Every structure is written in C-alpha cells, then in structure tokens.
Amino acid sequence: MNVYSTHRLCTAPMLDWTDRHFRFMARLLCQNVRLYSEMIHANALIFGNRQAFLADSDTTHNTAIQLGGSEPDALAKASQIIADAGFVEVNLNCGCPSPRVQKGSFGACLMRSVDLVADCLNAMMQQGQAEVTVKHRIGIDDDEDYSVVCDFVGALSHKTPCRTFIIHARNAWLHGLSPKENRDIPPLKYDFVYRIKQDFPDLNIVINGGIAHNEEISQHLQHTDGVMLGRGIYHQPMLMQTWDKTFFNQTHSALTDDDLINRLYQYAVQETAQKTPLRNIVKQWLGLFYGQNGVRLWRQTLSDSTQLAKNNPELILLAFDKMKSFQVAVE
Image (cartoon, rainbow, N blue to C red):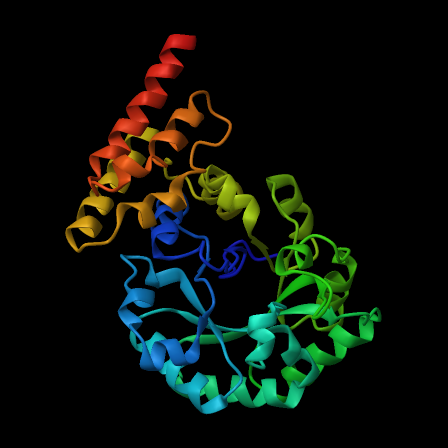
C-alpha cells in the first residue's frame, strides 16, 4: 500500500475527547497522521460558536472535521465553513448509534437511507475544496450479511464522487446497547472490510475498530489503505510518536520529552491568556506518559481541582518535574 496515502494512519473522532487540545498534542507527536475532530452537528457550525470548534493551531493542514446531520443544505453550508477555515477533509458520520443521535435522524441509522446519504455527500461536495468522506459501520442491529455493507459502499460509490470510506468493523445496535457497549460487544469482522477493498479496489478503504498496537496496524495495512485508531491512542498517545518513522519512512527525530512539555506549556500559556480553562486543556493530555515510572504523579497533579482552579499553566511544568524526580529516585 502507498506509504504516502493521506489516510494511512488516522485518529478516530471521539466525542468530548478529540478536541483541538488533543489534536495539538497529537500533531506534535506525529506529523503525518490524519487527525479527526469529535463529531460536530452541522447546525452547531452554522448557528453556534464555530470558533470554538475550528480554532486549531497549525493543524488544519492534515485535519478533518466530522459532521453529524442528515439535512443536505445544512451539511453543505457547514462543509463550506470547514473548507474556508483550511481543513482538508469533511467526514460524514454514518456510524454513531447513540440514542441522542438517532433522535436527530443521523449517525448509524443513515445506513438504512442510502439515497439520503448520497444526497448529503453530493451537497457537501459543492464546496469543492476539502475532500468529503464517510465513516460507517458494517451493518445495523442483526444485519449479519456482508452484502449489507457491500451494497452500501457500492451504492454511494456509484451515486457520489466519494472515494474514501472509513469502516468501523462492527455492527451498530440502535437498541439494547449503550454507545460504550456498541464499541465493545458487537463482534469485530475485519474480514468484511478486507473484502470491501478487494471488491472495490479503486476506493480508499480505511479500517477502524479495536486497533491499539503497531503490530495490528501493520497487519491491517496489508489489506486496506489506512488504519484509524481511537481509544487506544487516546489512552496511550505516545504510540503516535513512532508512526512517522515506522509507517511513513520519515527520518526526522521525535521531540524529546522536555521539548514536548515545553511546547505544550507554551500552548497552554496562549490558551489560558484567552480565558480557556486549564482543566479543559490538560484533561486531554493525562495519558501522555502511560506506562512510565511516575506517571501517577503526572496525572494526579493535572487532576488537582484546587490547582486547576488557579488556571496557571505552570502546573504542567510542576507535574512533569514531579514525574521526572520520581524517575531519578527509583533509578
């Protein structure tokens, strides 16, 4: 597979997790990964505080915004806003099974309305600048046949110019399972995604679901064009620090821990000066040193509500110093 594929490695859109603060950290760790925002409803961009969603710092060059919605006109307007802001991709969510999303008639339930999805994608493509892609499941509820996802992809590839399909290799249960259970209980069927690539070789097929290690990435890249990781890299973000060299043949040196913390600190200084709560920033960085000695001190310090209330970014340096001091003491 092409090592320079734009979707070779991606971070999954995760509600309340993959905000701009997480994306800033992720971009420091890996230059080539395609970053995805948490899902944003189209109307939130049109009528809400769009700056809160689109104020990325130097990450728009390889960053996608995922949209929720099922109204073609609204999705078209939101896509134009995203493209004008410099993001390279707009992704339509056809995979979220939460009751709130179902109530709004979008997310995974759209897999049963392929003509509407086609109308949405075609409307989103009118902006003409950012790539338009779709993320979906392999089926809904007890849809067990491969033909379900095959027909969905086939119809959209015929009715729209969309050529990138990000496929979560589980069914989405619209009733009986919580969103969390929908990420764990329905069995993974990676072979379905592999077959989609075989049956549609000209499409850009990205696999998602339950992937957390480089060895797994390598295996999936033998069968697909790209791999999307979610909670695995949220809880262990340092894994991304290996990707430029391992999966993109890049020779540049990764940031040292000290340089990384300095960059994060400078970012926090800028953000808190704009009245961004430090709590909102650092909660996305708690997993940064997963597995290292002293990581508990890093997490505890950055979770101290009394200290966070002061909104002083020096807390980041203090947390890092505590962790390093512990490491020296146990050597």
